[in-house]
Structures are given as C-alpha cells and as structure tokens.
Image 1: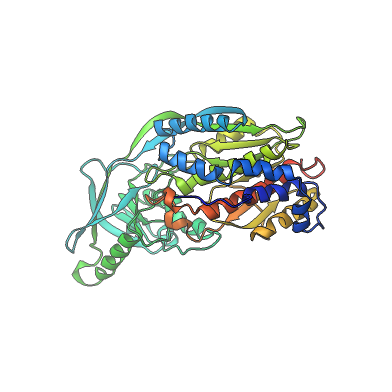
Image 2 (image 1 turned 30 degrees about the vertical axis):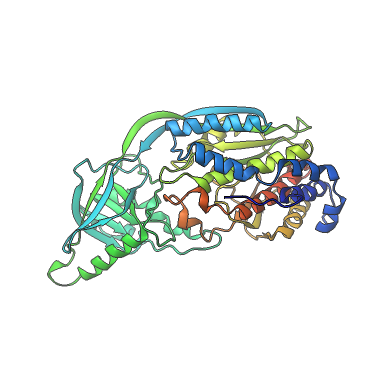
Length: 473
C-alpha cells in the first residue's frame, strides 16, 4: 500500500504547533502559534517524512509477525525493536527482562453434535485454558444469556456440563462495552469452574459478524482447577443459540450437545522483557515523560492494530520532538512485553522504576484509528497546561473529555500510584471487529488515521516534554 505524503508533512505541522505551543500562553490561537514557530522545525520534520509510524508497523508485522508473549517470536521482536530504536537515534536503548508463565495454543476444534446433524464450529482457546486432551470432551450445554446469569446460576445447573455464555457486544466509539461484556471472558471460566463445569465456550468478545473467533486471556483463582475455555465466532455463537432455542421444548429439552478439542500447553516459566529507549532532556533533574505501547501480540494475526500501531505512533512522535530540538524533560519510550497475557511487562516496569518520579504517563493501545478525545488526570497546578494542550489538539478534531484519564494497562500501576496521566482516546467503533482475531493484520491500518495519531501525539508530547516543574511533578 503506497502512503501519500503531504508537501510539508502533517507531523511537521504538529511540530510547528507544539514547539511554539510549549511556551505559548493559553489564550493564543492555534493559527498564531503555528505561524510563530521556528522554520527549522518544519524542515526537520519534512526530512523525516510523515511515515515513521507506518514503517514501524509494516516492518514489525512483516519481518516478525505474531509475537506471543514468552516465545522465541517475542524474543526476536525485542531484538528487532532494539535495533530499530538505536538506528533511529534514540538513547539508552535497553532490554529489561523478567520471568513469566508461558501458555501456547494447540489444536482447536468444536462441533455441535446432537440432536441435529453434526456441525463444525470455529473456536479459539482463551489464554490459560486447560486442555481437553487430544481426544476431546463432549457434553450437554448449559446456556446463559450473560455473565450475570451464569454467576447467579446454581451449581446444579452447571455441574458436569459445558457452559455457553452469550455476550452480544455492540460497537461504541469509546469501546466502553468491553469492560461489561468482557466479564464473560475475564471471569466466566473461573465462575464456571467453581460451579463444576466440564468446560466453557463463550460468544467472542467482539462486534464483527465474521467467522473469526476472538481470543484473549482469562484467569482462574488460586486453588481453582482450570477448565478448557474457548471463544466461538459470532456467527457460530448465533448458530448455537438457534439450536439451543429449538431444544428447549419436547423430549430433546436440555440435550444440546457439543464436542471440544482444545490442546493448549503450559510451558512453565520463561523470559519476556521490556524494551526501553529515551530522548534525553536538557534538564537531568526534571522528571521524565513516559509513553508506552506493548510489543507482544496474540498469535492469530500479526498484531498490527494491537499493538504495533501503538508502538509506531508513540515512537514517531518522540522522534519528531527529538529532531525539532532537545526537550527539557527526558522522554522515555516503553515497548512493554507480555501485556496480552497478564500485563507482566507493565508490572515489571513498575517493580523496577515505580519509585522513580515520573512527570506524566501516556499509552497508545487501542488500534490506529483517529484520536477524537483527550482526557486528563493532572494535578491542579497543571490546569493551564491542560488548557494549552486541549487548544493545541483541537485543530485536529480532538475534543476535550470530562472524565479522568486512566492511562492504559502498561502504565496502570504507575497511574494507580499517583503518576499524572493523559489519554488520547482513539475511535474504537471498528476496533472490536478486529481485536484478538486473525484479521489483526496490516491492511486494517488506515494510513491517514495513523498519521493523525502521530500529529496529535507529537503536539501533546512536545508540550509535556517542555513543561515546568511548577506544572508537573
């Protein structure tokens, strides 16, 4: 796919805006800020071109592909990342390793077997699923319309059966349905196991109508024996529901049967790691700005939107700021490892660096579609700073939100510990069509929307990296 360039570069426009805006009064209009910026900033950005982020996404997904946490593929991705970040001129590029339990998938098959003619279903095991063994298991389905219905069910309704949880998630711009419907994946297998289920299948936590199952991690409480757990594609879940409805009357009541063959393995403790790079600030005493993404991905696709795009966005923004001029604060880039399977990289970063002072934390991990809203969780001293940032991104179609920023998974521990945060909220309308599926591939990344992310991130990052100690800690 050919990427079109603008004559001066959209990223250059962001630099013009942010470089001047870092010290501009909040009352200055965005147009005036752009016109007053140094011409050297535009020249520096034009030399880089607009496509740093695209190049990272394309190269990572082409040369490495899927990057399952704790595997050799993820290790290769870390080596690739360090080489790329060094070649881009970043400083203090390093790998910080940590240990983690590793789970890998195996055979994944499912069939509706009775009382109708057998029909094959598309299924993907959920991370941390137990194995059925190579011969599989077969059982009667206990179907529930929602996670809440499963949680309220008696043990007798579940024991010895294969549970099905129906989650009909609807698309939203902010992705807010994921937390509610995702409980069927996050907690459903644990609840079903406690009630004595043989296994569980769920409707994929996704908004598409393709025959692509959505994987994702689940977890079991200490002392709870894991059970086989998988997600059906939405069309296959629809088929199961239609058959279920036909078996709720007459002699066949409650006799819908399903067979599962899921053979994942736990490989024990292996190594993952975070890749860190920096843009050194001119003031060594100033606390750094940390920007994060995650390097690992699920193995069904190539991890283009989740989260190669995020790594491309934050790194391109940091590169543009670095090229324009040395910022006051150090910018620390975190490409976290093992996020998908339990946020192990974010936890490892916090264990290693949580006692250090951080000025502010931001993360990109919601695909590559346009930034449409900005949310703040900053100290009272930063009111003028947040006003300046909101004004800087408004020309790019970004509105100011009214809810506090949460920061994202890999910087979540930092934010919980009190580090200020900013969320650059991306349009999630189509994100859960692709999320955790075989469709997470490069062709799903819209170059124009990816570029808008870089523009917005560059504007925000330039202002933050030049903020004063009276504004941020």
